[in-house]
Amino acid sequence: STSGTEVFFNSPDVSGNLYVQDSNSGLEAVVTNASTANGAAVILDPTNSLGSDQWSLIPTDSGFYQFVNKNSGLDMNVSGAATNAGAPVIQWPFGSGQNDQWMPMSAGNGLYSLLNRHSGLTLDVPGNAAGTQLDQQTYGNVANQQFKLLTLRRRSRLPAETRFLGPAAARQTAIGKTRRIGVGFAAGWRLARFRQWRTVFDDQQFCVRHDF
Image (tube, rainbow, N blue to C red; front, side, top):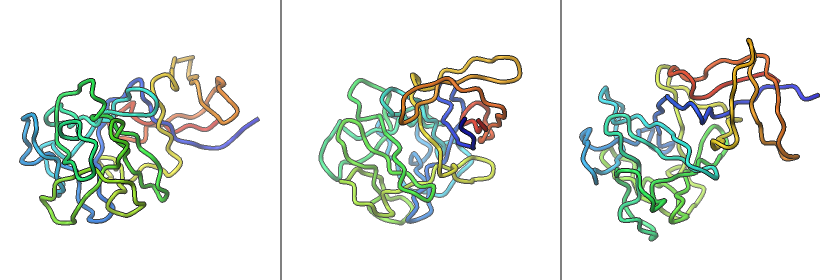
């Protein structure tokens, strides 16, 4: 039998929001001026009370996610579906170009790089001052391409062992006081029964911790 504790992204029932914090500057990814307009820049800025600094991760497939801004309801997007390094990051309605999908990739120490599905480039912060617009660049394993995904109330980072699973990888059904979930392991898929569940985020049903 296998025992231990891991954390899984609760993708089918996502209802929470996160701060996306640049590990270099300590500032957040924020929609400028709390704009709700298409094309508004995603910049570095301190947290605010308007929701423009919070993002909901909505799974698409193959490990990619929409990053949906709480205030505007629009997605973090590479402008014009550009594939060149330095292209700016804005907000835009979700579409079919895949330039609004990002894969969180562990960089260690609870940090993540965010890979754009369309361009294959990484979310990047070209400066460390408030107001700096985010862009995309070739991955360089540097602090300005690594982000903390932080909970809202305690602003604590996700546990380092967090796994991001797409909707096909996590199907949950209640079974009495326990639940079952399809879990992907290196050896393949299996159903596991978990004894203990608790929500990691203040908004329920976002990320679930369990013992198995």
